[in-house]
Image (cartoon, rainbow, N blue to C red):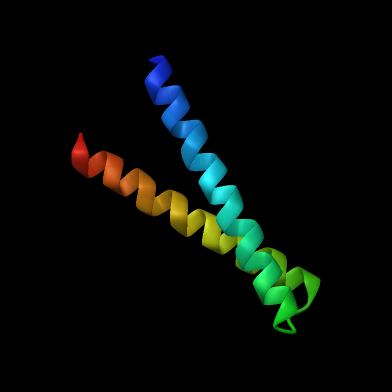
Length: 60
């Protein structure tokens, strides 16, 4: 992998982590339990990464 690809992947992971934390905190503040908030954040991160990887696959 080239350095640009590695940096792009790290950027995608960083953005997914930020999305996961924001979604988890929002779910927890909305009254969901801790376990449900973690699952919500993980689902949001997985969705964000799926969209990113789909866009990369379509571009290639």
